[in-house]
Length: 141
Image (cartoon, rainbow, N blue to C red; front, side):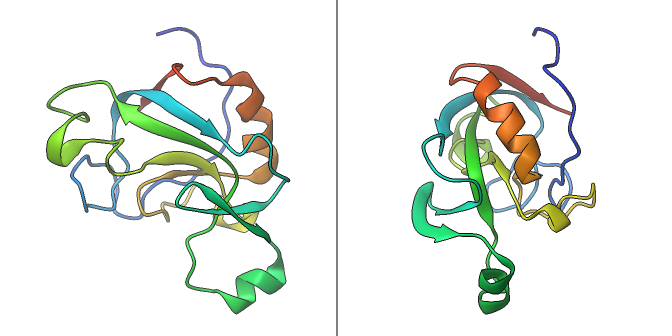
């Protein structure tokens, strides 16, 4: 593993760390970025199932859909690299669709709140995204 690119505040899973499918936890260990998504979309683009909905996040949109788990701006889709820990079967990070992604800034304050993903502020994911490519390794501790 090389040196860290930088450090940013994030929010991780409300349910804490863990690898099990359906746990709502943030998986630990060594991962790889399997895909970089959204580089051709505007800031605050809203994604569902890794596809742009055509919406741009705003306070009004948030008020109309308060139950949504907002995935915004850019997505770095992760896959585990450690068989038996975070790869394959019921512990597969990739199968769980775990991302590093943009989120409404007010939801990224270091408080565990996600459904397993790693949430970043818009400006931070925009700074990180061009420095990352598919295949780069990520360690989650």
